[in-house]
Image 1 (cartoon, one colour):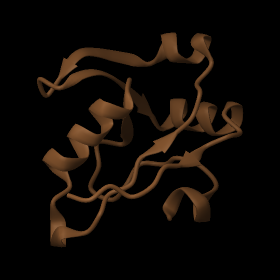
Image 2 (tube, rainbow, N blue to C red):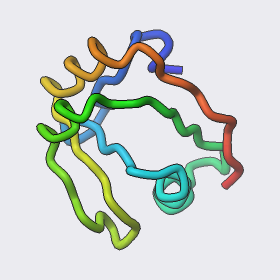
Image 3 (spheres, one colour):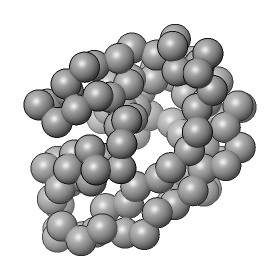
Length: 96
C-alpha cells in the first residue's frame, strides 16, 4: 500500500533508515513468515528488477538472519531505485 501511495520505496517508521531486499522469492517469503507475524495478517512481497550497476552499490549480506543473500539500500539508494526501477510488481499476499 505504501509503495503505491508514495510511488516507490522509502524507509518505514522505526526502521534502520533504509530497506532490505531479498535475492529470491523463497527467501523473501521466509523473512516475511519469520518477522511479520503481527495480528496474523498476510504479508506482501514485491518484485522488481534492479540494474546491476545500482545493485553493486548496495551493501550485500551473504547470509542475513541465516536465511540467504540480501541487500540493504539506504535512503539515497532508495531514491535511485525509485528513479531507475519503473516496474514494481505486487505479488499475491502470502498467509502467515
